[in-house]
Image (cartoon, rainbow, N blue to C red; front, side):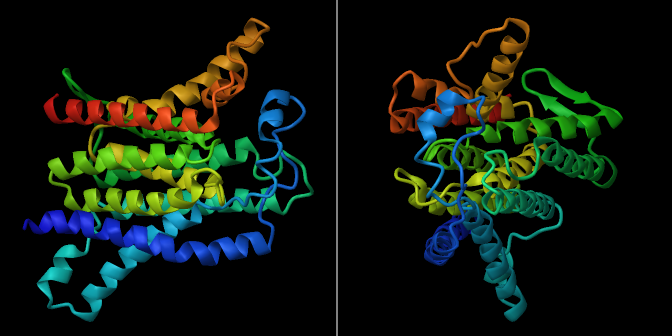
Length: 346
């Protein structure tokens, strides 16, 4: 058997198992300390959303995303520890996928983004009951842009990368503009975190997207990065096991912020950031629905959707939440396949 196949898929299974083991301990702590919003909704200006989710947001803990990044950390740590204990074992050396040129940067952004999100979650659940408690949007934006600035500088000065590949066209050298472009992509993916709004939605979509990038990385010969992506898939599936309706907890900012920032790095490392528009189309259209709604209300004085983001619009139309989630999953698989095909043949 090809050792690379084992290197990619074995850690994914371990990550999934680690997530299942960690969940009872985390769940017990979350419920014991009532780590949920004390007031449902997003304020008085969102009556439709509040009516749809009045009973869901209070009583269901946040911070479920801890399962994802802790599973990733434990799995990476396990394989690295094996190489330290048995340094002369060629199998353990080969299976270790913590590498400076492929996984350090996405792992760093995953952890930093997750910790920023954890702070926001903590402030939301320990606040005074204000529905808008937590880090303000602008504070989170500044943190994401700073992280994007660090990533852009690293790619430009340390990795000597200043170009992006446009499928069926060729390479476009951005020069120093790569840095603000990197920041823009990371911010755009951060804004797509609004997809974390229904049981099982964000977990399923993100697992599919990272699965697609695992495939792209593998066929590019970036085996360590492929293993990293699939380990995230394993941790996300462990989270999803407990997040499908009725959700035991929500992913919230500590999950979605870490995943979106890490996804930015993975897209640039595989030189497929343009293809990200296809692979992550459910994130793109969900984020765009919010922009369209806000612009329409400001300039036309009326709404395009009953409620934004898009998945809540379908809820407001009367679709059961599970139908919305599963159709998002189906579309995610289709767009992931199309994106992988484009990445491999373009």
